[in-house]
Amino acid sequence: GAVVSQHPSRVICKSGTSVKIECRSLDFQATTMFWYRQFPKKSLMLMATSNEGSKATYEQGVEKDKFLINHASLTLSTLTVTSAHPEDSSFYICSARDWSLITDTQYFGPGTRLTVL
Amino acid sequence: RKEVEQDPGPFNVPEGATVAFNCTYSNSASQSFFWYRQDCRKEPKLLMSVYSSGNEDGRFTAQLNRASQYISLLIRDSKLSDSATYLCVVKWSGGSYIPTFGRGTSLIVHP
Image (cartoon, rainbow over all chains, first blue to last red; front, top):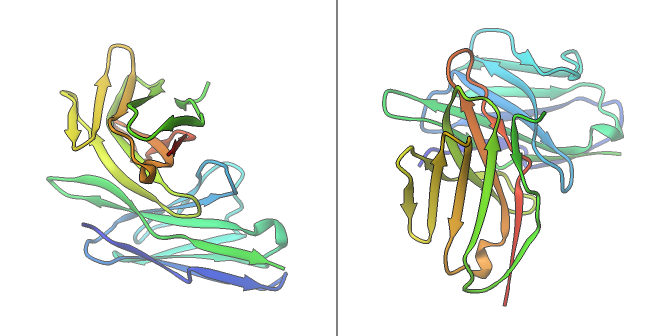
């Protein structure tokens, strides 16, 4: 089946630093990828839709200058958490849309657990 | 009103039991439906798509009721390993593709 990778799987950083998370679709091309965050025992919250070659679409309440998204190729999207603060600590999950004539399915990366001290 | 609603549970059942979850959606233009499974501290994984005629995969049966706007997931002969959160996902037809997730239903299967 389709595979989506995410790197790093876990990161601990100091407050004020920036953290970049990579999301890759390994065996299909993804023009659309999604970024979510999830707090413990809470549901997934869509942050933004990442479109290859164009600007990301952010959900209401998500600061685009804080969460920078780049989707420069059909297999890679990156999320950069700028000037991270402890309240940004969360589980960040990406997903990629596998869309063709015979399928239209969303596959998730394994997630990145961010802890900001 | 939330677009996709699920009973958060938890559903606490013994091994071998049959359990069913429902998920209601508000947009009648909804086109595609899926069930995902999420284990604690892990990413969601696709369990099965839901087809109009209903579909079965081993112990799992998914059904769609367009008239009442809900989908269901039936798990027969529950295993301890079925313990997880089950997420219902709905995609609207037309416009941009943004799948909408329910909050998930927690299932706990005990010995």
